[in-house]
Length: 164
Image (cartoon, rainbow, N blue to C red; front, side):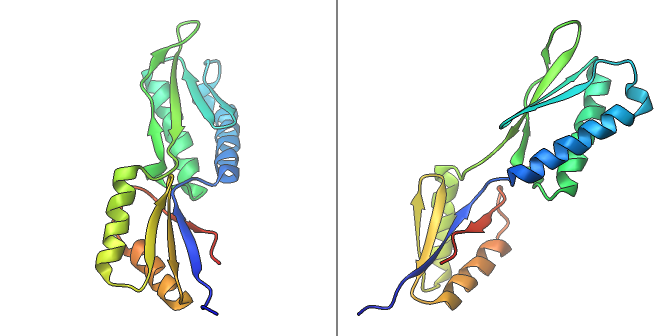
């Protein structure tokens, strides 16, 4: 009988509970800030959709700073946040969407699997949708692969899930 294969998945996604906590903290700060009293500034959060609304560009920048700093404090990687363009909203306000990038793009996944192969570790890396599965006969080799991936300077954050 062959030895069982061990594996883990490399994914790129934010912890949605931490995102919710960051948004809640941002909303509390917004409610307590003196400079936002009487303005139409708000943060709307529904499922994966985050929208910031403010009176003008200056307040929008302040609102972005609040949300961005709370996200970083909650451990959300800055590379996962993408700000949309400012658009006119109702009643002389502007709105900006905050997009949370999830998944690893195909080109980046191909480059990552090539780097893992080129390293010469005894592991196999294959792309499965927006994730990369790394498998091996040895848990030690998988841990070396994890350490190697962590050491890479990637343009996207990575998490390791389904270690078995």
